[in-house]
Length: 247
Image 1 (tube, rainbow, N blue to C red):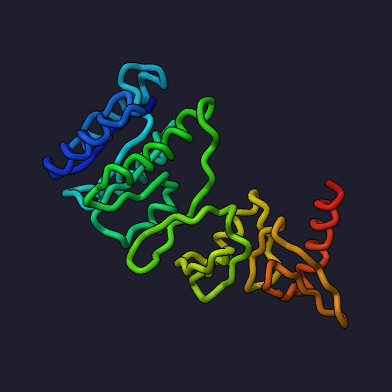
Image 2: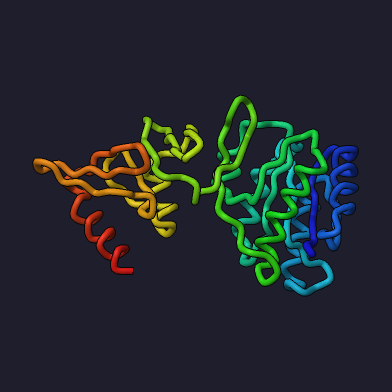
């Protein structure tokens, strides 16, 4: 069970969020704070008490637009702590999902908060806060689709295509444009098996179906897509594929 601190400077919104959280059987405790000072004081006290202390906090549900420090400001401060709690943003604004992703938020819930959507956020938190009980959560990335923020599992992405300061994520179900440079995703997802094959493409190694060398030009097939491999990356890619084939 998880221990929650909810932060919102609008008291009715905070009380409604706390009511929904306390109704979830996976939530051990849910306390509220109406400003950044109070929230940071409680988080500091929780860290001093340790993970098993009476004041321990597993996750902070943060509103974004608040008087004084915003929820994003609080999240940045929390990230500097030795053992920071998890972060879930709860906001009426859709436009901050990418900042939430950069701050490693577990989820991004839009107001008005629906009980079912909040339950999904609690499930994600619990998977990370209680790894011995639940399977680890797959990493996800927020995307905008028709004015709605959705989360795409990184494991579902076959390859990524650079489009200026944006990147297009290609999955079996379609593609999504996100405002993140390809170089950032290359660094962030290297440990998840993504490899740069061209200045314009980043590919999930496990999704490569075929490597072809024709008249000095190297290409790979990823599903129905055929992608060029630059000379700079060709040898490294062949070595990685050979290593993968050997198990």
